[in-house]
Length: 470
Image 1 (spheres, rainbow, N blue to C red):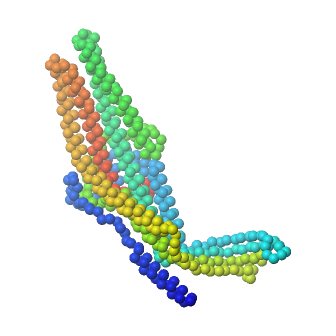
Image 2 (image 1 turned 90 degrees about the horizontal axis):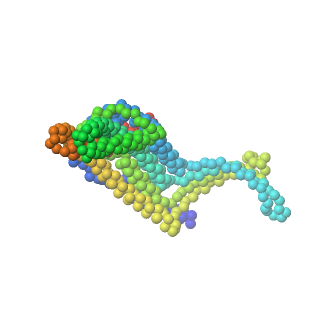
Image 3 (image 1 turned 180 degrees about the vertical axis):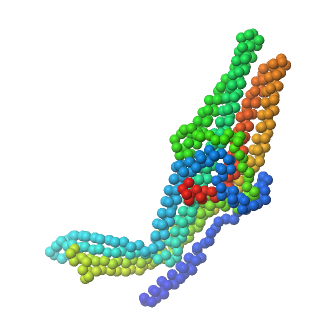
């Protein structure tokens, strides 16, 4: 009978092992269409050149030492950087905890008890024991190993989240700085316009007092002056808001921000020579999605393997005695060892539900991975198109400012010579003021498009920063 049971148990183990090999599946990362030609013009691929460019701190290409200093401060002091680093350590500890389940667990236990029991007359009795407890689940089918694989993949995903924090922070600091320098330039234009309109108002007031012009013309000039007055505090408030936002990114309380080069002097970097789509595989969000997909793969395997028998070994070695003084005598030694195997038969669908849950999570992550990659293609394509089109816009807006400057000059001459009303002068002045502000916004947008491209490509500069703590 005993031999029959042994053969049956061996058969179950072999069948289970073969079934385990069939159930464990390989990486299911979906294949996606890659593209080598973007919608905008792009030079022929030169991967080595691109690698060298993307390994550098991208903000240095704008050639502003003050921006470089602000970036160094942000990467060291921003709270999100510290939070990301702590989260990585959290997931690293989870890997260690998960891996520990695969090794024997050894513990020391001690117990002292006193009670009554036994035959009449009932007398109090003492019991003392000290022992080492050993337990170990033999991971014959790899369930615990796959759980550790999942934890390790989670750690890799969290490391990519950390890289993404660095990338997002650097992009936000650079964009905040560009916005600040844009507002500075627009404030300069507004103040210059205000000064000119103040001079015009003073002149027209003198003419009105001398009876040369009507009150209608004076009111028109005063209206334009007050419009310029109102624009200045509006921009000043926006500057304060931008400084406060940038201060928080730098990890300090709201306050003034140092300035470097004017917006017009910031260098617009060139696109690296060749942007093969394989570069997108280095983006933190894509690499994080891949790691999450690998973790889901491992969890599906671990959930399936819960159907398999579990083999455990337990043991005890110690001493036990009713007399504390004689506890460690050789005659009081006790030990035992147990080997057990458990096979799930009926669990009301718990294991099956766990497998279904793991499969559903895996399917969702496959779709999320596809979405992430497609979004990466979109962001790069958008940035490349924006660089081309925004440069065209900037060139057109610059020419518009030049034409309106001439128009304003001619309108004033026509008014002074009595060929037109002051309404034409007002119209020209308004158009010039609006166009000049728009030109500054386009300058900032061109730099922002280059920044968006750097962010979309990801790069490798974050790795060095993370290794050195910012």
